[in-house]
Length: 278
Image (cartoon, rainbow, N blue to C red; front, side):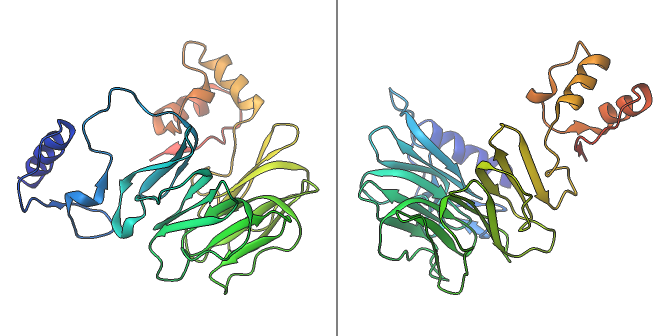
């Protein structure tokens, strides 16, 4: 019965109908009971879909910078994490329970949960910001990293980009101006121990990290229990095309299911390191 009620509410919202007074949604989100006003993006469709220059997916919500510089968010809106302020932005980052963005004047604005002051940015001019779980870091115009709340110690050096994990205890990684990657914070799985080399971009997950090297290849480090730190390689793709020529290219697929993996193992003399869906 509960599923039918939720479905009816969602269908009514998508159709642009007004929900009856006192209507409430009950689900499995971060909170036990969620009012419809906490779900953003269910309004009736507009004649023209907005266009964006950048998007960031958080844990339960998503935000993007529109071509006019304003920020639009959708998804879970508890604590106002999907309710951006007015103004013009160049970049936005959706974290666990909060969101931060760099405005066109270089200042950082944050919104959402602020229990640990992760949504209280310092003064100064920034070029990029990354919202994590319980803290936030940004690259200042002089290349230094600033993180808040104050308890967080960022890696030292001059940076062009920074990325934060979202699962506490968190880790932080950034690309330095010389192309190397430096990390700090939790390193239980080696997620804060980057390999040598020159990088153009890095992205920190919960317990693993991946980066794009200057030659275009992807390198990952940290927890690899589900294959999340094993990026595809040319040899894997070639083996797939050799033994399954009638199947889609592996680059367009998700993790292999257990049956496909079994077929490869019993028919192909290759080493299969691709993630297997449970």
